[in-house]
Amino acid sequence: MVERIGISLEKDLLEQFDRLIAEKRYANRSEAVRDLIRDALVQREWKEGGARAEQVAVVTLVYDHDSSSLSQKLAHIQHENHRAVVSALHVHMDPHNCLEVLVLRGKAQAIVQMGDGLVATKGVKFGKFIPATTGEGLA
Image (cartoon, rainbow, N blue to C red):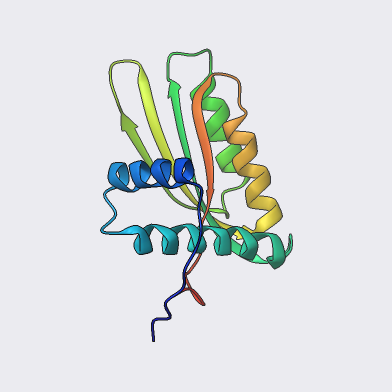
C-alpha cells in the first residue's frame, strides 16, 4: 500500500532537487525521495548493526599500476583479508590506470577497516567505500 505525504521545501532547495532529479533521470520526485530514504536506512542499518554484524560492501579504487609497488600493496591487503573478498574485478582503463572493484563480506568493523585501508593506500587516485545491504526490510 502506498501512503501519500506532503513536504514543504524552500524554493531554492526544491529547484536544486529538481535539477538533481533531472540529472539522475528519476521518473518523478517521489522516486527520488524514496531513494534518499532507502540510502538513509542503509546507513542506519550499518550503524545500528554493530561492529560484529555481518555486512556487505563495495570498494572501488583507481590507481596507476606503474606507481612504485602499489599493485603489490593492494594485493597484499586483499590477501591478508582473503576471507572478506567475495569478488574482485580488475579493469585496465588505459595504458597506465586501473580500476579495481571489490565486493567485501564480513563483520562490519573488519570490512570497513579493510576498505579504508585500501582507499587510503598511498598512490590510490580515487577510492570509495560503499556500504550495501541485502535490502531486507526496505520496500
